[in-house]
Length: 147
Image (cartoon, rainbow, N blue to C red; front, side, top):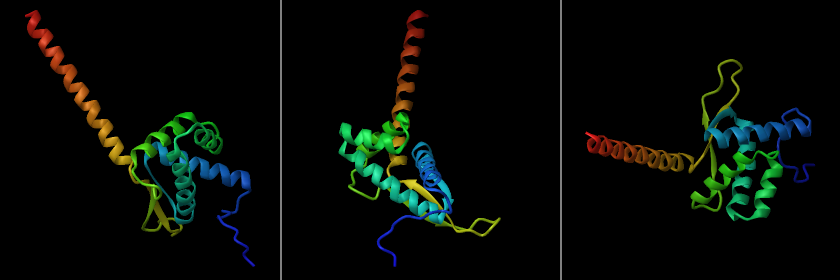
């Protein structure tokens, strides 16, 4: 009888499994997109969506709860809060897409990505480019004045 037990074991102890999922979530937040096996992808989506939903609240309690889940990785937690504030959804922050199986052992693979990550990065990159342009304009004006 199943008795509502959720989650996959991955043939690991609970500590090892928790560390695996933590590492995958940290990589996902840092990179925006990761490639892993289908089973791990499904678990990462579960864990990451819960973290983003908690971060959406934006209070100190939520920050502390996420810090405890991610072993006090403060930069990653700041990043999660930043992304969660920019996404206008209540759920479904992370998705996975099935990709062709791995060649070595033919295991099913998937790509996991944060949905609003690329939009946030594009805005950030555009603002940095605009700042560089402004700096160059000021430098050109200064050179003309000196000449």
